[in-house]
Length: 363
Image (cartoon, rainbow, N blue to C red; front, side, top):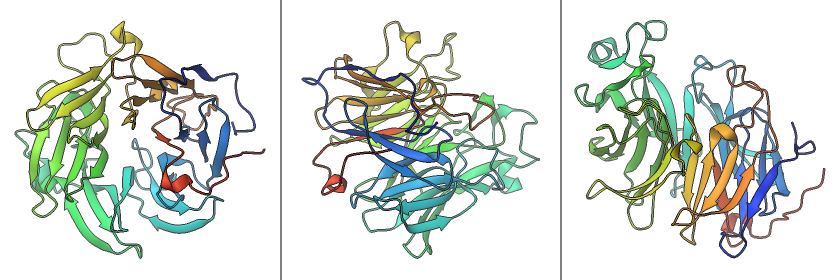
């Protein structure tokens, strides 16, 4: 469904006095369109892309869209979060930069030095794979276990740095969830480059978030595998040094009814200093994808991927803006006809990438 055809959904609640006024960017799962809406839910801009999204796109400081495209002919195209081609397009949709790697998946990041970091799958050597613990026996992918790599490339596409997860993981500590296949060791699904250059990453199948020392490759900090997390997503750093993440709450130990949370964690103390869950708690749940963003007014924007719901809450957990995706698609037979939104971002009117841009959409 294109932006010219929308269902009777959209913004269902809005408190202008409490919400952070801005523009919300999202890409419906399987769509070849990234959409930006205003606080009333009206489309103010749209990018039409050549490929369905390998989950999402982001607006850069220069006003261009950086977008992960899904290539269905990729060697691992049937694995969750598969991408294949990273595209940077200008405001009018013209391609200004592209990078193709059929093993890219889930997440990417434009670094302040102008380079780009991507997440990609790599085959784990057999001598290391045999040491991996956990997972459902016999569920390797054609006998292979795949791991993760973080690769930094310059604007010409040259590799300038790479980190291989299997060289730094500990099989005695980084244990795969017993309810997940052994096709992947970690299933990294998000990362960011920290101000000092180190990398904060989320490894879903081991229920762990880590800080990686970019110089040595060592894992300096890890948290979550003690039962705190259930296949989390979208890990980010806040201005106070705390970590914000979406805890999907899938396959949690000792919990019979799954539910999701958004958590703020102090990495110095490993203390959860803030938590959002619904009341009743089972009313808020997305088993996969999803995102969270701390806004300048200290509110938090949350994307509940499975339901196509985006909502903004105050620190006390009160909803001040709520939106239901009006652009469903039928791209993936696994999910059927759905309104899934993998990830979303809110940009204020002062955002550098919006300066001088026309925020009017015409069919």
